[in-house]
Amino acid sequence: MNYPLSNIPDRTAKPRNSGITMVMDKGLSLRQAEDLVEVGGPYTDIVKLGWATSFVTPNLDEKLKIYREAGIPVYFGGTLFEAFIVRGEFDEYRRILDKYKLEHAEVSDGSIEIEHDVKCEYIRKLSEQVTVISEVGSKDIQKIFAPYKWIKLMNAELEAGAWKVIAEARESGNVGIYRDSGEVRQGLVDEILTQIPEDKIIWEAPQKAQQVWFIKLIGANVSLGNIAPAEVIPLETLRLGIRSDTFDHFLNL
Image (cartoon, rainbow, N blue to C red):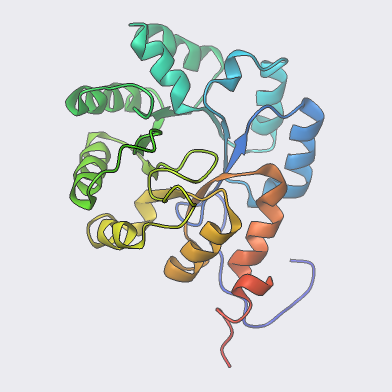
């Protein structure tokens, strides 16, 4: 921090196991990636190249190098994993991870149907190669899972070897753990937290109101994902209680 200020919540230090900020890169240029590193680097824990954007991103090697040299891990979105799986090309996907020297991978089934035992087997296999982040929830707004199912799926994927599980919301924040209005399904989140350790979950929260809700529920060190590059600094101020939305939350009056 640039100067002292009292009553600021403690933040975990990088490399963080909780309080993670996962940033969504949906096609930044090399210059924009450099700008993200310069301004948001201290607060960015991991970058996801959204869905399958890595397939068409120009200068991919150079972009990965920018993040790697800044000490920020990168992974390709889960939709790319699904694109390989639906084509029966899992081994080719593993070769892609090696080719680009990736140390993380996302396993999801938000766009295709995969038997859950099969999904867990993919997690087990990939966890021998990289750190796996698995995603639970569908991108289909019509598919609403009961809380017990979220808990069952998350537990199984953690047991299969996932480092963290992501609670699905898409980059828009209107499916999965949210209603189509963007409102949090509060009962669902409360139920999940009765069974799944908070530090094992990354909550996708692209909207400010969603970020505020989770910070007030869990604290400054809640792990949040699908954060836009321009929102990294604003999110950190929310975490620290120095933005109006969380201004009173951490004060010891």
